[in-house]
Amino acid sequence: MDSASLRSTARRTLRRNSRRLARVVTEYEQHKDDARRNLDRSRPDLVALARKHGTDKWGTHRYAQHYHRHLEHLRDEPVNLLEIGVGGYSDPAKGGHSLRMWKEFFPRGHIFGMDIHDKSKLEEDRIRIFRGDQGDPDSLRAVAGHIGRLDIVIDDGSHLSEHVVTTFETLFPLLEPDGIYAIEDLQTSYWPEWHGSEDRESPDTSMAMLKRLVDGLNYEEFVDEGYEPTYSDRHVVAAHFFHNLAILEKGENAEGTRRRSILKKRYAPS
Image (cartoon, rainbow, N blue to C red; front, side, top):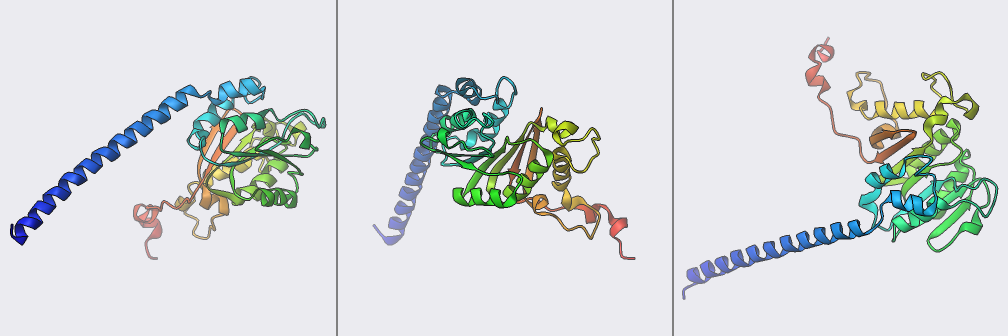
């Protein structure tokens, strides 16, 4: 057989083997997806886990269903989750229900809590609890420093607007890219007794901060040429709102804009 025939035979063999390999990879991916779906069906969802562990994320509130939808893709990842607010008020032996729920939901995860009261008695394998003040940026940064990587942050702390804003401004920049940041019990934003305001246009409440974040999602469309985007403008890529709950996604918010080509008169040379 001459060299041309050998090359032709080799190419045909390579094509056949490539097709076979592609089929094997496709079948493997299908089996993997089927196995994952079967595993997911066999495991309790967050609503069931919330009921099991007695957390108010289901019952008093209806948060668990929303958390399941937005966190399910991380279920088998070795995430670090920090929840502000452990529960049980000043009783050192009470609280920790949602931390135990998160521990079961994330079998490879490490769960961290932070509370103004000493809750160290509630610690167990894969659950560690820090004492700290969410109204103090230094305290928040110290806790984040002990944890290291932050994949998920859940603010279920004091629910006072100034604390919610301080916690977000301190911890969101420390959150990993593709991280999730959640804020619970936003009803207090409207309650003066909880440092909120009856004035829905008040700029100082937790909901006012969140409304600014929604505007910031579209900062590239602002026609104010002197506007300097904030850190959250550039890194909040999605905001999901539910009754008394907000879930934010972090990433790179830089999709670009066509405003100059559309608003030709505005940007025409003078």
